[in-house]
Length: 165
Image 1 (cartoon, helix red, strand yellow):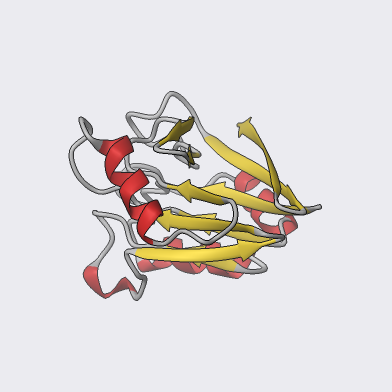
Image 2 (cartoon, one colour):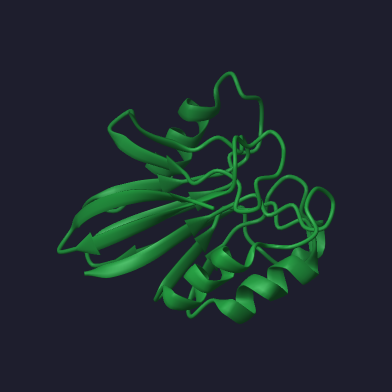
């Protein structure tokens, strides 16, 4: 079994002063970390990069254009493809927009979408794809609290647990 930690929407320093220590500890412990954007600053990205063993990250709508991250990234772990995007755009068609991006980057096997943007934790299936949003790892408004998701992958099977601070 391989663990993939899913985080998003740090918003450091514009909305929160720092990424919580418990989140950084989980990043350090995970073999893989996925960040679905809105670091907010190069410093926040550097903090996550320093803590992560293997980081897959994308640029969010408030990240600087020169932060050096793609809009979409993929990570393949134990037969499961993670398609990572921030989900930038209006809330009303958020799920369908993210599912479309996932479909464009899907693998032949199990494919999961990881997104952020809304700050609302989500674990839903849309157009045949499981979509995960870990919420905000700092609890940045309008998040209901600070949260991440831990995905455990084994032989093409995925289990997900939401963790709150």
